[in-house]
Image 1: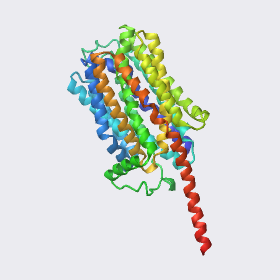
Image 2 (image 1 turned 135 degrees about the horizontal axis):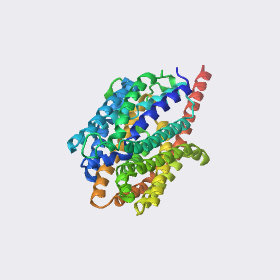
Image 3 (image 1 turned 90 degrees about the vertical axis):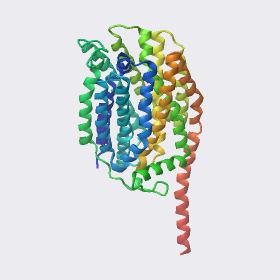
Image 4 (image 1 turned 90 degrees about the horizontal axis):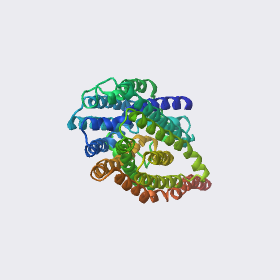
Length: 442
């Protein structure tokens, strides 16, 4: 069995490589699609195609990871993602772009939850009493640091490739430079998955129970995961709040580049400015991840309250961002949105993993991701259309309002969590008492 330190090192290395290579093209990704003729409405539709693909495949592929192994499914995900990115580089029409986005959606559905589930299960197999919140927060910080570094370097790479033909006139242009560097890194990640991922040997703590029976087929895994969701009130609340989370995140990711490009103006240094902006947002989100465990302890082990407060704060900040008309205050609010998101999502992830049995972790994380992409679909298609017909601030104002309305879904989680723990303590005590009584009759 791998040691805890070895598990962490392997997971953080894989996580860094995954998100660093993902981030390289991110600072200019939407600008590249625009350079190839896509309007804001079409970009929203492309993001919606991506989201729908993920939604259709999310739960079945999560069950596949539980059934076949997280490492194998993560490797297949990388192969499909490589195909999607390669096609995107050669796409100049909407149908070709749509197919590229669909392939990336398939890759994301396969990847979603597989490495995360491997990480959590491996830690619990090594130490059932391990502090998951601390490790998940570190993982979130590594993810966001990789995204930040990738965004800065990706923005700078556009200048490095400035000798290539102008964008929109050739396959390989300055805006495609970051993607060209990302592709070999994805190949390296594929090799690393084969070398580093070792499936844990499940101990007694993760054996099937009456609530989570052993599933022997993909269909059975999906059915059991769905039934489990219906039986756990906290899980239902967490999934419900995931819809507005996905909607808001999608509206930011889809629209921030054209918005800040308009505020900053076209210049040779635009790609670098956008890369720095994105990197700063990820670094602040990483700080939020690291701050989350301390806040939860400071507030008396009430992670639901932490989630509620920062969910509402993010909504207010997004509304404030929608009201800005100049770059400096917009950038500050944009960064604060990401910092509050880091605190909320790190704590949300802890609550979610507490409610999931190990035997169905990939399936359940996939269900949560599916719900997030349903919200993302609404954000991409609906808010993308609003941005195209009205304005980007109008779309962001709606997204912020949705977050402000939905914060109350977190309110009862701490009380339900406390009751759940008390029940777990009571049941063994009652069983022990009954056993003693039975023995006394002998």
